[in-house]
Image 1 (cartoon, helix red, strand yellow):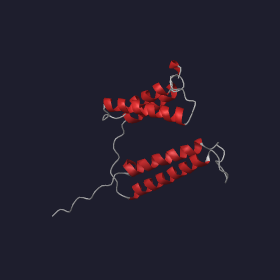
Image 2 (tube, helix red, strand yellow):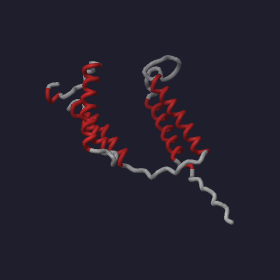
Image 3 (tube, rainbow, N blue to C red):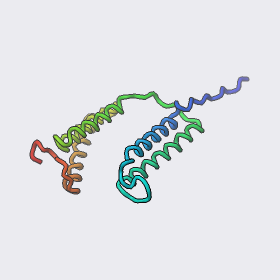
Image 4 (cartoon, rainbow, N blue to C red):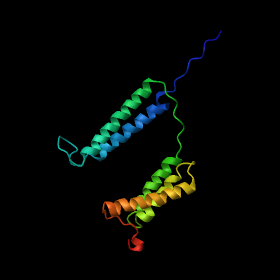
Length: 159
């Protein structure tokens, strides 16, 4: 009678939780580095750097906890990396940043949403167009009218 074969554990850097924890650690460390020059980043005084650095510390700590627990416990192997999602999401952010000042929220928001929607193969065109229209209207109402921020809505149309 053969005993059941022993379950092989994937190497630590091939486990989902370890990879996710390391990614959160990297994000938290980057946030600490990027906010180092803000007032309130050092010492007991509160300032514009206090909240981002506190959030960075929480993200870094949770990342370390997730990575350690993933290292110690069995976890499913990490799925192969796909570039489609990150590339389209990064493209959406860049398009928004490039268009918002020149063409306004009325163009930048739906353009970013439509490009971001391409990140997933499961996105349905009709749903993403409806979402883009509704979110654009919400953003214009919130940022321009409710909060009174001087964000251009459609400079090409005089708004």
